[in-house]
Length: 247
Image (tube, rainbow, N blue to C red; front, top):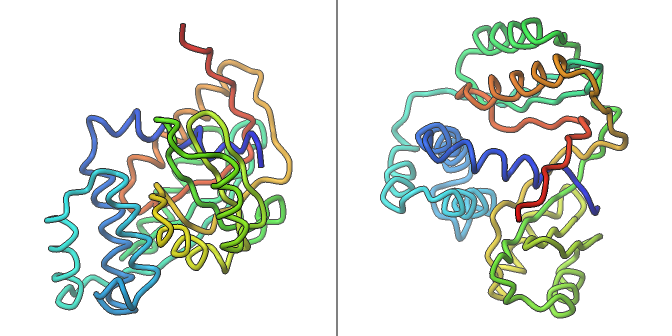
């Protein structure tokens, strides 16, 4: 899975959220509340909740905030539903947007407006998903370089991984979509700390954008998704330009 664009998206989001952490807290908070309401507020008995709490901590959500969300989950009257939208962005880039919303009409209207504004169009279910594979993706930070590659690879495959990538301060473990939580739990039990462990849409082909104006529109479209509280995850097959190496 070398070169998968998800890490570029993670870096992009981390850079952009330094001054907008409240947005991240809100989005992860919704996921935690829904998971706690559906499967109980005890992460030891709710694997989905356990992985979301790990995701929250990786995004620097304070423990007090997480505990308040768990306490609030049983009392909240908010009724969120998960809805996935598909469409095409500038230059025919295929895009899948996962949302968690309490008002599907508002969310659909917002997304349609974003696509239209940036030279794309919101499509029907199935209009672009055939261009993606559904896989479990686990990301383990190794910026300090303390994790041994051979040991990590052995542990990952023993835990049930289907692929493994070790580069640039990041370990990427790929699993079957339905196995991601199970594999993440096994790795956590071995002492690994993951930034994210979720089933994702992985593009089977990439689409390049060469026109400068369309590049700007694509960046704008991703910014609009980031800024919308209803949007949880965005997947695309844009072959993003490589950032120049820092000296």
